[in-house]
Image (cartoon, rainbow over all chains, first blue to last red; front, side, top):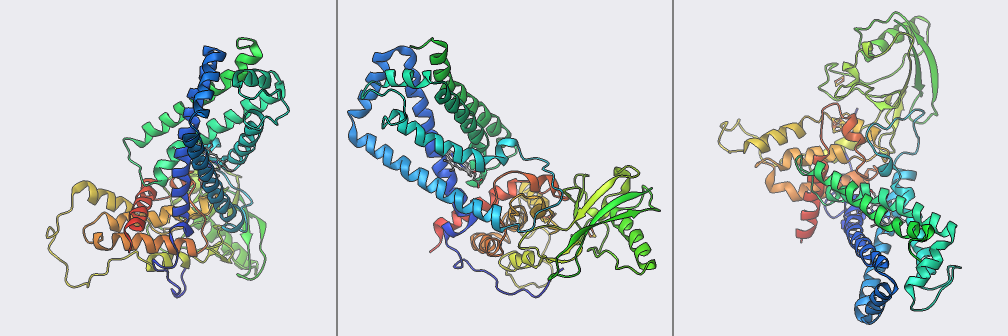
Length: 228
Length: 248
Ligand code: HEM
Ligand code: SF4
Ligand code: FES
């Protein structure tokens, strides 16, 4: 079925970020940087198992380098804004515009649960990040907060069951987000190979699982009384 | 054999449509899905009703004309099979099937199960070609092509432009189709000179037509009757990104 071809695009019709491919590349790069932060953040926080001096010393060390700290914070903020802005633009296109009339019946054949719920896991992670900052950085999360005593704040915070539960749920969602995102980003940036892609997919799931376990071990240890 | 068919009936592009239930009898397992509709249409014509409009041409899985959703799956439940090649033996007597047209803003329904896929033609017109003068056929091996590239280009060239990838994609993205064309031409020496220009232009046209974006779900790959692989989407993204960096 075809009618006469008119209105054909040329390279000048859309700029890089105007296109879906450009926005996905921005999501992928910002996603990699955020992932780097998630890893480093977890590695830092696991020092909680080495006792209050170690963790509080680590926090003090970061504070002692204000230039690096603020550089990292601003970079992360920029990445978060780029990641979210792009995802919102794409979500509006995909969910509201691209298919105005839906199917009476529709069956997914391949997409994983994690992949299909990126538009849910993402925003919930955002809510979590905001609460997380309120609780442990700004001290306004409603749990006991002592300036400079990260260890005590974490223990006091996670003793509150709903706080721990929300934290654990959010980490599971972050793990799902990354289990799809960490392999998806390779294709967004142009890499897919029959030999390596299956390996990348398995690694993405493995790394996401490690992140979930590493992070939720902290509230669980606090609730179980192993860390006090 | 008998099937209960719920079919999307829509008079024309401007009117609203709805699902209508039909009991299609006198079928047998060797018939194709399209032949089942032929039989149903004969009965409808005998009764003085409007037959169900659907698109078809070759009926041998090579032209890309046919295709609709069968129980929520583009081209139906059999993998690597176009609707015209889907035989009724994959269904049981008395099965209930929902037949719906491809759904996408860029593929408006014209009538019943027929959608307007001109958007694909315009994506091709934006760069899915090689601008060399066509003369007499060149010598077979005048331009050497590495075997693996020839194979991959050939695999991508198998795309028949049916639109199932768009229909199956939860975002109605045209990534697999556009990627197949960009890969097919870009891998070959004849297509290499325009490789970057092609990626920029075809991606722009895909976007301007109102298709959605790729979220790497893989629904297109599962639905594609020609086995086009997600790899072509990576190829397209790579060409697009490289072209964006180098453009002047
Ligand atoms: C620690 C925080 C986060 C990390 C490490 C992260 C990482 C990633 C990665 C690596 C991808 C894959 C990109 C690609 O396919 O090219 C991705 C996709 C996505 N992210 Fe995030 N993300 C984070 C937070 C968020 C937030 C806060 C939101 C939304 C408010 C969000 C929404 C999305 C969506 C919707 C996608 C899918 C985009 C698409 O396929 O079109 N993410 N994320
Ligand atoms: S990529 Fe496959 S599903 Fe999409 S138009 Fe081509 S043949 Fe049809
Ligand atoms: S009618 Fe030609 S592919 Fe089905």
